[in-house]
Length: 310
Image (tube, rainbow, N blue to C red; front, side, top):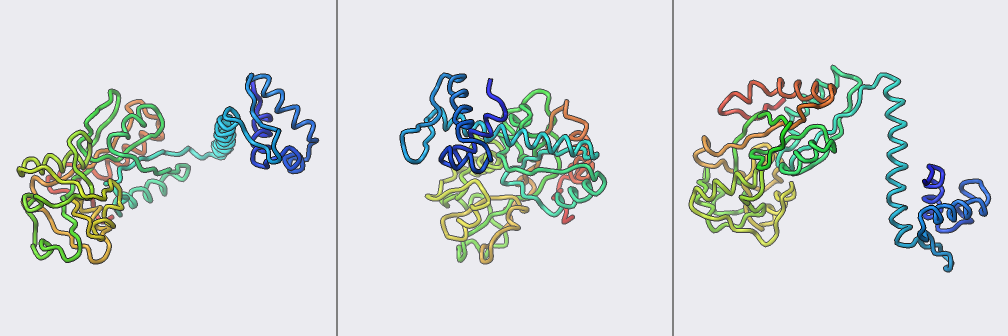
């Protein structure tokens, strides 16, 4: 069994590139460091360092251990921070995921400000994850809550999938595009256009929804030669690589010169945002989820809903 001290010494040795420099930094004898590494190698039954070169090199086993040791040491440090925070009365952190098509709108930011003001012991860590990947991450406790685009194709038992709001879909066009003068665009007008974010039926979220709409309009969307499923698709539209169908909230980030037009027949061209969290979530997470759902409740029940300005 390796000890915390051994892992820390090993990381310092690899970072320093030599026993002597690591010994100087740690203020211990070089022979003591060498003995610790030999004990580790004997315990693991693998060589960790190649000592025959002027600059110390880690073996494949050593590189693997180094990566894991760095992660373990960081986790232990965070655990200590969490324990101290808990003693000071800090309640904890909510790990929130959001799809790239669900930007942190003014309405979401307003909710976060209100909730954090009401709960000084809470912090929120935000990460980006696709709509389909959020549910397994939450189910396996790698995250606490998610904001996904409907539909989520694979649903996990023991999870909440709560509608928050819907919003309209729009088309982002390259500068100077022939359709830019139209007040609105029928989906059939995009037949033959290149999509920088390729709609696909076997993906969930916005990709699936737009693919269904294109098929209903009688065509299969064609992929642009340069594509992106992230916010960078707006830069690709600006660069003239193709068009993109996206939610209004995402189009609000369109760079100057990129025309944005609503889709004709907007009643059927709407997209929903879902909140995901576990049914057995910790009280901290359940409190956060309940507050978010209440915040958006008027919108989730309105057929023409959209995220408010905040």
